[in-house]
Amino acid sequence: MKTLKFPKKYDVIVVGAGHAGCEAALAASRMGCITLITTLNIEKIAQMSCNPAIGGPGKSHLAREIDALGGEMGRAIDFAGIQFRMLNTKKGPAVWAPRAQADKQQYQNFMRLALEAEPRLEILQAKVTEVLVSGKHVRGVKTDTGLEISGNTVILTTGTFLNGTIHIGETSLSGGRLGESAALELPANLKQLGFSLGRLKTGTPCRIHSRSIDFSCFQEQKGDLNPQPFSYDTHQLSLEQVSCYLGYTNKRTHKVIRDNLNRSPLYSGKIKGVGVRYCPSIEDKVVKFPEKDAHQIFLEPEGRQTCEVYLNGLSTSLPQDVQIKMLKTIKGLHKSQIIRFGYGIEYDFIDPTQLLPTLETKTIKNLYCAGQINGTTGYEEAAGQGIIAGINAALRRQKRPPFVLDRTQAYIGVLIDDLVTKGTSEPYRLFTSRVEHRLLIRQDNADVRLGPAAYKLGLISKSKADKIKTKQHLIETEMQKIKTMRQGNCSLAQILKRPEVHYTDLVALDSRVSVLSDDVANQVEIGIKYEGYIQREEALIQRLKKLEHREIPENFPYAKITGLKKEAREKLQKIMPLSVGQAMRISGITSSDIALVLMRLERKTGSNVPRGTFGRKH
Image (cartoon, rainbow, N blue to C red; front, side, top):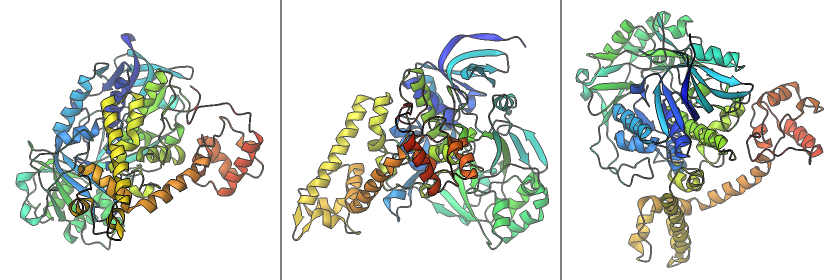
């Protein structure tokens, strides 16, 4: 095939226009880089391939952090949302989690328009088959038509398309999504470049026509009366919300599944990849939880202008005739008209321990990876990686220091640190339980936490940064004020600490208390009620940071450390942690191993080559 040179060179090339690719391309272009995003099909930009929703525990924190960093996901879901709910409100504020159902088509349209509106960003429908490398530096990409496109940095956000194989019962098809071709040449190219690839599996349920559902058999779930937006730029949501519905499988459903397990690719041995632990298929639920007579099903509309309904909880790769039979056993779904059958999909991913915390690969300079290619699952996990990869690709091009969020700063920091330090053998999903300092890095204060960094990076305007400063000043001022104001023998702060008292009660109680916006009042209330816990967390973080930021030089001689276990030596040499804190979080590394590393570090004090805060030398 004749090679053709594309007439333009780009600062950043993003391969893939899913949730990771969109945020990566937007961040890089908004930071001043001439950026190209390639996609197999322009009509599929930002497609919600699985459930039509954004947010939930852990995921909402990511979405709000993306928004605080100037990303697009929050604005997109506020525009396209059809139902908004705040989850976990009966628990502490650290785990409160907004979740929104989306009109999938509107979400895609919004994100595509956002890409098209960026003056430094271009979109190209093309299939990338090769990453072009000179020595150990990336120099661009090549397409299946022989077109070579030059770029200073490249970000791979290929989702489930690398060697994607779709499974529906006994039938297997090559594809990245049903009806879309897989990327077969690119994974072979990545192996040639020296990357280690693994195999994962995910899946999706069937979709059915709403007119075929007897909704009287299900429990209606309405949206919140006062819906809370995802984006800090959205001041109020005013919309007619659409209901979801809750139902259950039953013993008859489970019998149909058990009777046909021999035809399931999950249990016949056809699927080799590891599936999602926390979002299992209905086959897995029935087999692994035989004591359960019923499993939840959530009926989720896919939009306002469609009759398509997503059956959350019924992900499956069973044969099509079995899917039909299974639905007929479920009360309210016995007349189901299937629009799309469910299927499982296997795909290749890169072992994320081959990445730096910037998401740059360790072996090829200026090459970054983000999203499901790194072994994650979920739109929010992908988008969170995407914005960090886009930021760092832009910083690399501009010869500025890298940007890394640590575990004490953001859920995004926890996500990436888990991936690059521990790796993953199954699709990774972020939960609040993975986050050590979740009381400090809540979803409600993401703008205050990350806004200043976003402004320095050029991702938000000065006016927005000033608003964040004003907000933070209001919070601090009001907290100090109510500590000094008294009602009888108690300060107003002491009164607010009572579980049944809220900030609005103080406004009614004492005219001196300021009337604040809901978001500011909420943070004042949390700051007062949890003050002791927050102070202890902050003190703990300061102690841990002494180790977290103790750098380990590049090519540190672990092989020469006397007494270091073979397992520890192998893992440390594989990960090559950048700090003592990162080394401590490697699975299998003990405190005695860390003590030996620290002793060796002391011997080398003064001979280290500076590398910046977190990244390798540019």
